[in-house]
Image 1 (cartoon, helix red, strand yellow):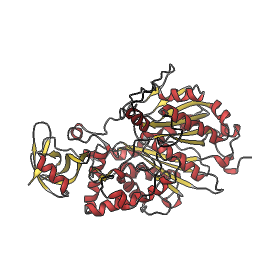
Image 2 (spheres, rainbow, N blue to C red; image 1 turned 30 degrees about the vertical axis):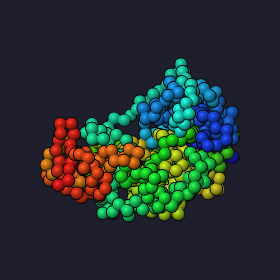
Image 3 (cartoon, helix red, strand yellow; image 1 turned 180 degrees about the horizontal axis):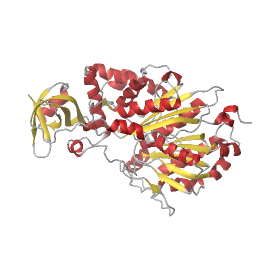
Image 4 (cartoon, rainbow, N blue to C red; image 1 turned 90 degrees about the vertical axis):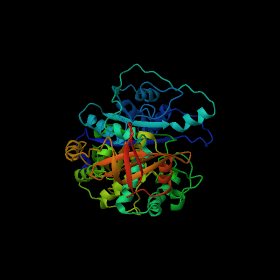
Length: 516
């Protein structure tokens, strides 16, 4: 019989009834080199099995949603080809013919928003069950290519797919791109150093701060059977100190502070209506409820009033907690998106958490150590969180913070073993508040003098390749510039440029800086 709380629910209320993860490590015995579609299907089969009613759940699924792979995001090569309709390729492997198949937009926030969309469709009566999944096989693609092996991963499906497109408009301005902000390590390094400057921290102490933050993550990743590779816990020094095996990528990041995209990982989450879950015989003790979720988009980096801040994250976290009627002290576990330290620092600040919070800040081990499974990382977090929350005989709460782009898109989700009615994804009011703040308009052609607010030096094979600085001109306008010459680049690589006074000139293509 349903409990009193469950009996009061709308029978169409969506609940998570199954979660699954898959990993294929190159070093493991039995490695065969699965494609992303194979890994997603393996994770989906695990989610179906986890429900305890695989056959009945499979038969009930009429909607599937796929997190966009890096291949379909133009963020990774696909020398072996790829499915033309990824969600249908995975559904076919599962023996499912969905009425709706969605391929979502780019971004680490998409697992949350896609789950919320599928839940809304269940609540509306458009489906009784939906499956959300994603996977990456970037590690195998690189490994097999290096071995000279050839695979055929190209597939074609005739049925219709709802392709949402890339959704990258507004992430970076042409001015930012022209000056070399073209990859996450560069963009996040600029934001990270801006935070260091705001805190008045020197490079050594801030490196230790980042190492202290991530050292506990490595312990969790080392114990996680779904981590992308076998690993051992790392110390603060091992993470933050540059060495031959831990080279600087872009100041202030060593390679052990950067999301690891060379992974073979998949994750899946099965949603069903309360009525369908009961009909399938899935016990209420196995259900996980989505209490609230929120999402919003940030301004382009150069348009942000404070380069290191993340108002969209702060606002979505606050909105999700308010909708759920919870405060940070109520949560048993957190998973804060950790592609680099700064989104974790920003979420911690919004929630009032410390790096050594005994509850931990991740349930997987984080993107640099568990694995940065493309846009799909937070689906692994949802799967791990659901397993963490259920089966305790008492209500437990977990909070997921999912980040996309360059601190560009954020989504927050509150999960619990306690029953709750469905609440729609919060977005419009949050976005309106963020958009009401005026954009900073940077100078396109900077000539004169200025003071550096943040910088980074991008390295190729450990050698300085480019320097980017952002700062304020004498008249208060924001500028972005690259090193004027090799001597300036060498100086940037060797010294702390925050607060430095520089001479600026436009060379006809981009702004250049040199020491005064």
